[in-house]
Image (cartoon, rainbow, N blue to C red; front, top):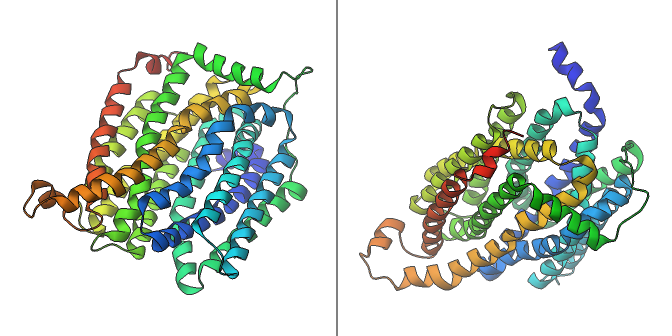
Length: 430
């Protein structure tokens, strides 16, 4: 074990920043989970709940292409601390509105949009910081650790949020969020020093910097096609995210506890996959791992969610759908970090964020709209004994099951299509 621990010595600052930032992310995820339940209980609408995520992603997608250039120029530590502090202020605003009995859905839309704006600035800065703190021989391990932290957040946020909601109420969840955010800010301000990459002598205009990121992607078609592949998957995954609470909170055999259980099992599957990604050596073909992992996820979970009638089948779907996603993410991140020069990463990651994530708000809107306006009315109008009613059941939530059946087919088709993309496979040769 000595060589293993000695190899981690160069990651001390990374571990400090990684742990405190992810503690803050856990608090924010708990608040988001609790507010999704609160909003669905208020309105009973998948579209209304999905708009919470839409408002977070729209400013992120719209402005990310310029944020990378700003992230390259600004002090990384101060930028991250300011973004975390602003997130704490928006959370505090939710607490004040809740305590005064004034909290409404539109307040959350506005606050989520402001948080999305801060994430737009912080995300490319965080990507640069990770690269600067990671020796090249530790890229695979750090990619696995990033997936591990995401898995822990996915695992723990519904468990902790449900427990605090049940025992102490929504205010307790928000107070925990504020405490974790304070820990992250104090660590950045007083606990660490972050290395700064060399700043160009002449600062180019933001529009020109944004064009440089796009031009780099256009001239490296393998990386661009990988990003477009993930954009298509994000469209389908965000439709899934929009429909999942509506189905599990509405169907017979569902409810808040079942939603929390499925989310917890998702987190456990993510955790197991993240441990694999962290401990296993680099694969011979990263592209094959990415394609096959997504094919497994798309072709199994959505189908089981559509056809299942209770928590055991839904949990099995969560395991099959999420077990290999951290492995996929680790290999995708490794490919990007190894192919994109560090001097251009802010600009290129900003362009990547716009291209890869613009489909997320579209998917949330589309998923919520299809559940509320098409699938649920369609299933309610079907006569008794209709094939779809026999296959998917009846009552509220069966429309979401119908949507899951459709996105299972769409996700499988997207994976098979991009698996034939020769430019993706050329990344293995470079």
